[in-house]
Image (tube, rainbow, N blue to C red; front, side, top):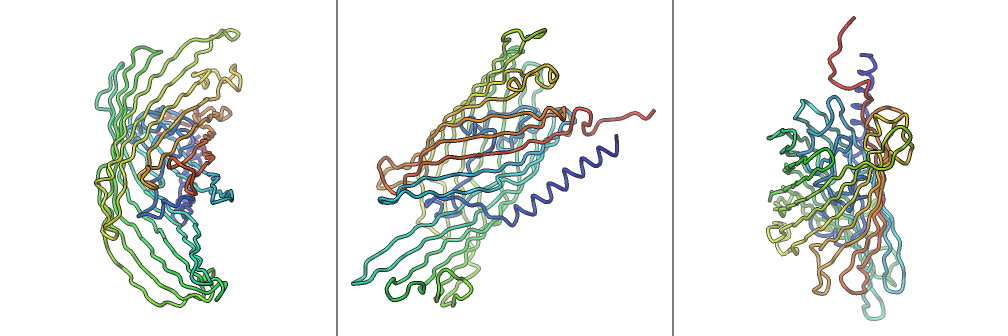
Length: 454
């Protein structure tokens, strides 16, 4: 048995290192013209569980969910039951540009994180998650006499946060628990903005390329807390919150101007001008999130020799980002509007004791069913109107009962729209898909278990 434990743990570590090596070199990709500003768009909690519940991320946690967006939850895992979470996200966008309907799609690794219960009331987590993303491709054409100039605007890259966090109970009573926690880590990444210009009739491919590259490297931290009031076994109220304070990120900017015989082939770019290693600081805007949830456990119909114990959880989250505090030394005129988020989610579990009753429950009784709604005001405006983002979500989680563990496969789907209150080329409809797996050791192979030798 001991050799099996060692082998399983080695697999966890090996998988973690392989994914880290891939993610450290990969670039996140989105499709948003607004990501051209600064570091790009701050990453949403596109988690395979939360995305099915209206992106509620502050109040959703239990022994089966690794919630690294609220670091006060790491001590909720079962004894000897570490969790490993890996998620993949994709988005399909439908955008109208003039009379043309444009479709684009993206797919990327979202995160990989491991959470470990260290003691009864203390837990840690570590891994990598997205921080900001940049990705767009836009075109414009300006008439000049009998000719015209075509401009192509391109952006790619982003930044990630590699972190380690911990949480502990300040109060640990049977009916009331209060936990606090935090993540501390390192933000790193490279983001590129590029403008290509071509005189159409003079040359189909030759022209100029203006490129700037922003490299981020800085320490970063975030805090979280949650309080759980257990009225009885069937009624639980949770109040939770997270806070990302104002912090300064060190950035480096490199600027280049090229002449290109073919703007689509960087191998033949001829450097006309460059300025490298320009140092500056970006002061990030603080973000506050508060959430409230209510969990109702109840007995439903009798199933054979047992009574099915179901559970319904209602979640509400509210977030605010104070962009008036934002500063960018390298772009001093860059400003944003204050943004707000409202998230509502519902989760229904037909049989909450599915693991103990695995031999008698049906498949659909073990599935976690999720639905939600979200509404955001974004920090950008168009023609004086602030952009909004809203949509509906649904999803489900399927436990992997064959392993007798807390492992599960999850899918979250969002159907949303971004708009500025009128019909224009910046309005987008999208479908988001978030798929992920939570892995845990079986009940018979719990970690850190003291064993006796016969």
